Amino acid sequence: MDVGLLFDLRNPQRWQRPRDRHYGRILDFCTEADQRGVGGLWFTEHHLFADGYLPQPLTFAAAAAARTRRARIGTAVVVAPLHHPVEIAEQAAVVDLISGGRLELGLGAGYRRPEYQLYDVDFARRISRAGEHIERVRELWRERGITPAPVQDPPPLWGGFYGPRGARLAGRLGIGLLHLSRESFVEYQLGLAEGGHDPSVARLADLLPILLARDPERAWARVGPHLVHQVNSYRQGALEGTGRNSPPLTLDDLRDPNAQDTRGLLRILTAEEAAVEIKELTAGLPVRHLIFWADIAGMPDDLVADNIALVTGRLPALLAAAS
Picture 1 (cartoon, one colour):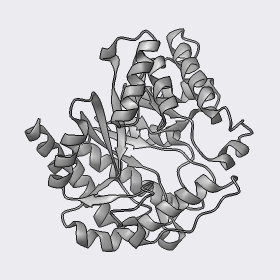
Picture 2 (tube, helix red, strand yellow; picture 1 turned 120 degrees about the vertical axis):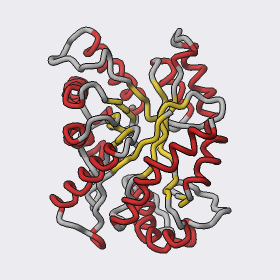
Picture 3 (cartoon, one colour; picture 1 turned 60 degrees about the horizontal axis):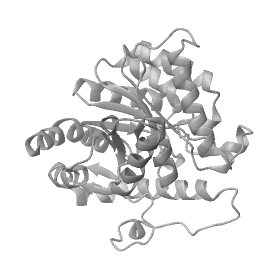
Picture 4 (cartoon, one colour; picture 1 turned 135 degrees about the vertical axis):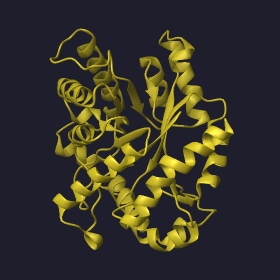
């Protein structure tokens, strides 16, 4: 089980940096994390976000691959139905080649209607279409239907699905599941059996709603406004095109331990606190990758650097001692 970092490249107007410098800043953080021994660097996809959310994760993954030497390079996730499977297979192969065989390709279905409208793709069929694309990408690699071929034969594939239907689909396909939940794992195992796969191929990974800090309470005061922006933009994005609306959340809402809606909620913990929770969360499960937020919506650089130092240094030592 390795520990990695996810970057979404958000650059909100309130704290906006020149966009070229912002991209360079994130690549510098990737380089630093790699030198510190991070297990993985992961990138994600959304479109039409006003804060510049990364729209092409494989493009940025290629840049990160060129700047690093050891970390796995992952996507969590590419929204598969928005892209032709040949394009995904080719771009992923290029990243795998640049990285020397370090790619972890996470593919999912997404959830935002405006993104599907942008690409003129049917939103209603997104999960089944994602499954079809995953099968086609794997087939293109296996049969050398694209050139050049990736270094790995094949690169690890992951299904970024949060519901039971998607978990079972990932199992039937015999790929990893990018969601860490015991309920989903049951569906995933059923899918593996339905697909005729050996149970030993099961593997899990996920993005944890945790940020690390040496003094969590002090960090909350500084991270809070950035988290409010991030959560509310996610919520607004999910509602666009549905005819529904929801009042924005406040920082008090996000710190409410009894909140009914926990989507997007984040906890700031010490490495010691996180290690205890991770041990309980992963016990008995075939977890390969744990992924932490590297940056919350353009938060201050010193907090990003401290989070990276704890994720790459203190936390792995604690997890190793607990195993």
